[in-house]
Every structure is written in structure tokens, then in C-alpha cells.
Image 1 (spheres, helix red, strand yellow):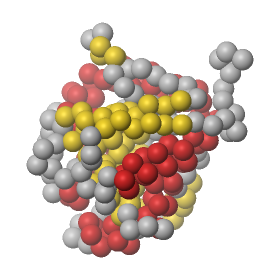
Image 2 (cartoon, rainbow, N blue to C red; image 1 turned 180 degrees about the vertical axis):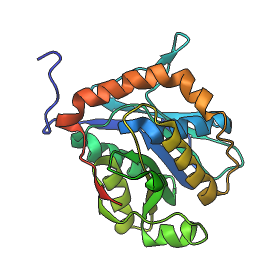
Image 3 (cartoon, rainbow, N blue to C red; image 1 turned 90 degrees about the vertical axis):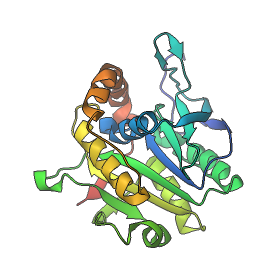
Image 4 (cartoon, one colour; image 1 turned 45 degrees about the vertical axis):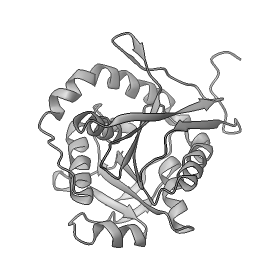
Length: 249
């Protein structure tokens, strides 16, 4: 039926067309608050990353973003000469029923191309006090030992990962791939700029990057209308398709 929402039994497939990635993949996706997406979008813009590939989806309600009349792929990959980092900017909402095939496509591609590490920037809608406006990590032991021993980023206390985040991190439990999710509380507005800045600060400390976040407020204002529409689309599908945030501080 035209316009019908896909059921959990619907299958989806994804194809990656890209140059070989660097040893680390850093990702941000369309999720509530859009903090992770805003952060990676700003990162590639601020540090002049170049687009090196994209991901296409079959059997999945898609979007085709455009700017100044020029369309672009909804899920893109960026790299920067001289940095051992590839960034995934995922504007397409991936419902929970499609999380495994999407994650499998990404992880099979990273394994084939020798990626050693995958990290995700993510905002979660959890009750929190003002003093809890910080970034936490959920990471495999090898990621922690490799990246986090010299930082003051605290671990997330207790809870569950769902959807794409769960699938990506779980691969690190059964392979040599180092995996992590950086998590910060988000508010309802989209994009949550303060949350995006917190995530970028964690990236800066973890990966020794020089990221000037002062222009982020004006950058976010430029894309606020687009992100608000994207957030509204997510909210319309939330009850049936979004994973439930079940984290605790």
C-alpha cells in the first residue's frame, strides 16, 4: 500500500561505494536531538574533509537532501589527507528493524578495508541534572586502553544500547575491532548545539584534533530549519520504529 509504514519483518539492504577508509571510522546519525549528526557535519566542514563515498539504501523510506538546488546522498563518507580518520555523516533515519543490515554493511566494509576502530557520537533523551551536561563513553576494553586512559571522559553508569549503536559496539566484543559510543544528554530542540559541542570536545580530547567550536552556533543556525524538519520526521516515526533510550547516569 503506498505510504504504508514498513513492518519489522521488512528487509533492507545497503550498498557502500567509497574509496578505502582510514584506520578509524567516526560516525553520527539521525537520532533525537541530532547532536551526533550536527557534530560530524560540523567536523567535516570545519576541518575541510573531502567526500570519498556514500551509502545507498533499498527497501527503506529514503530522503534526498539538497542545498542551493543541488541534491546529495543522505549517508556520506569523508576523509582528510594526513588524518587517520574517516567520518560517516548519516542523515537518513535508520529504523530499529533495519539496524542490523545497515550495521552489517558498514562493518563488513570496514573489515574488508582494514579499519581498526569505530566510534559513534550520540545524544540520548534521558532525565538529567544541569551538572550532568557532559559526555560519557561506552567502550570495549581495547578501545578504552587505546584511546581513553589519558582523558577525563567518564564512563556511562548503566543501561542498554539499541539499534545501530548496539550493533556497531557489539562487533567489538567478538572481534579485534575497537568500538565505542560517546553519549551526551540532549534536549528536544534540534539541533541541540550545546550537546554537539560536548561531543566535539570529547572527539578533540580523544583524537588530538584542533576543533574551534565557537562558530558552531552560527553554523547550526544555518541548518536549523532543515534539521528541525528532519527531527519532525523522526518524531513521526518514533513510537513504532525508534529504539528506546534505556541508559542511566
